Image 1 (cartoon, rainbow, N blue to C red):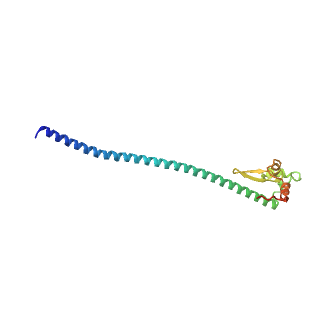
Image 2: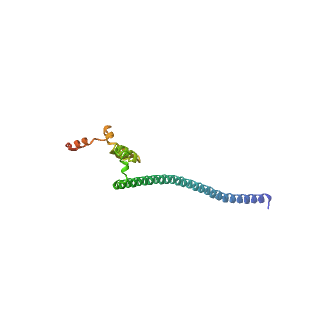
Image 3: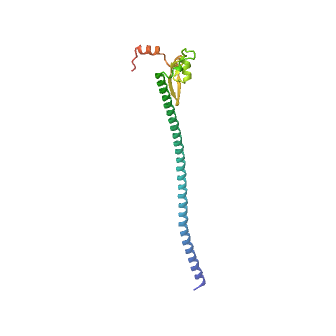
Length: 169
């Protein structure tokens, strides 16, 4: 055989082997690329889920905190109700008469008694309404509210009730 033919066969064999190696490596490189893309998607999905979990955890903490506050307020209201009930029982039995009598035996002013006993349901000896806005309880003095035009007086309400109503179409 001639040397040129032998060199040509060797070159062709080397080229075929190189082509086979390239094709096999090309498949491996594509598989690696797909694996890297899949890993990146996994990491993205995991981070999104972690962020969503963190947001929901914060919401849950806020809700629990609000529930604890509401429970504490309910306990406080229950304790105040119990306190008033006990005071009522003491007054019925005559065990709290010292709150109404001065040292000299004269009767005390109702406002002093309300202030000292912490009766927050009375202002100037008169019962007041309670307004619960923004989760807070606020005492509303009817006289002051009527003066400022926030409430209508009883006379205004009675007059408007007696007035004929207009028909609307």
